[in-house]
Amino acid sequence: MPLQNRVTPTGDIVATPHRGLFTGNRGIIHDPATKTLLNKRWSSPAWITCLCEFRGWRRPVMARRSWTELFFLDEATAFAAGHRPCFFCRRDDANRFRAAWQSGNGASKVSAKAMDAELHRERLDRGKKRLHALPMPLAQLPDGAMVQQGEESFLVVQGRALLWSAAGYVSGARELSQPMLLTPPSTLRALNAGYRPALHPTAERGSR
Image (cartoon, rainbow, N blue to C red):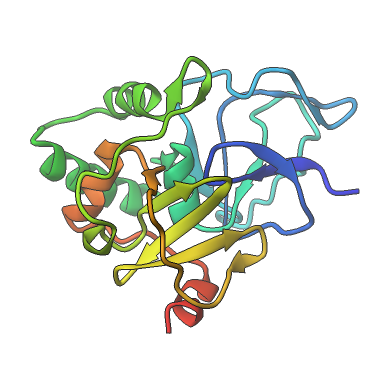
């Protein structure tokens, strides 16, 4: 049976055999004896996205009382859920993200702690995922932004909406009537400022 450790664009953590391109964490939120999640879904405001392997290190999943290994289809999914790049295993990406975040949000010398505090406000509403109104038409959103309509999540690529699934993006663009923004607004502004998230290979195939 797969462990409950896969993060959806809405920030929920579900069980699925698919693992995706990235791992990451929100602190310690599991019991290593049973490899099951605790009732809480974060223990730290630092929600980060990491490499699945770094310098030959591969962590045994949920095996010890250390941070809880979570998995993401791709970086756009992690961003939508409210995560950011890790400054340890993804330093170059994290520095590029911070530079774009500062440029897009009109800030300077922003610390990781300050970004985490802002993201925590933007991703949650009384413990639940916060949705935001679109700041521009969907077709003008940057590649890598994600939106929600009903119970379904969509990736925006070249102005087109692709349906998210745990296995990848479903081929064929969708017409959406009243989507809401999943990606935190400050992260969206970083995307507009030039940060390009790593997307699952199915995003390219699906956008054709």
